[in-house]
Image (cartoon, rainbow, N blue to C red):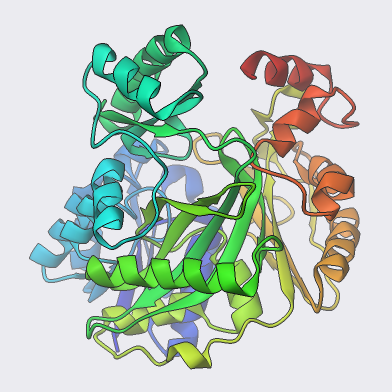
Length: 465
């Protein structure tokens, strides 16, 4: 086991990693930007080091600064959390070249799976179903038009190096395809430095279901069930749950087996997520692999009882996986709501600033992961997520009722948050009956009936359809 770990991240995930380390008896070093000087996780760490100004490019994304901090603090490993450098293959390579263990997959695995067109090829080789699409990247508009005609509209244009919904466009005809390609390529180039795109058939009324995997360096790979992440807005997840309410036992077994098969064929180790799209017939198709821990890993922890962060650390230290597949049992139903400092009435404009009162929900089977507190000032420099609210109950219906109660109980005064909108989403019959899909939230906003989102979002959602 490691003696000392540096956390190359901030916010609630930094706290989450520190807590896991404490229970393992591992010392922690927290890095921070000048904007995060009052961050709560700094009080929890054994040592803290400032790595730069507020801009993430000069702090949390500055590889030399992070490596220097790691060397000064004499750590044996770095945990990247999620976002920032978590899926940066170059960072993983630099860490290991400096004799510092990167808590995640190998650099080559991250590079292969981080390129969506390459990951698709690997899925095909592992006999994992994929959405019909182009055979690799599409480099010119003439080829794109030909491929789209062959697979049939509507199609999805996707950035090979994309993520978080960036570099993605839906096209329903050739003019929108050509316009969408230009927009997707420009967005991908700006966000990822790579404007390569490929095409896939757009699955209408699809569900987003992902499988959590764990693999060690000794060839052992298991899955920990699946999460349904279909409640999204513009490809950004709002609510996640486990198990998925739409899968039969047979479908679940097939999907999870496919995820393990792909991970083994890729030589994957550490925690990761294999994402699938499920159509209205129940058929599932591979989307991508997230080669890191995810925001919603907590949902899986609640239904399986497995501490995924601790397992990441154990695996990275060279230990053999402590669990066999038969040891993993999913109990009950868990739901997570991501709470963002955003104003739904103003097209989800970020709402940084002072939190005058932070009073999280509590009670049986409720979990809150947040770095916020009364008197904390949310900086404008980073992602707007300020917390995760989770509930775990024997059934989905009970979990929904508990979540509604917990959202009502959660008080955040100062910034605008998405709590009222999340409460509204849970009230919708489409969600309660599990008849929703990845476009459900946008359809709801387009009706203009939301009490919290308002007419601005109805116009925005309508124009995006």
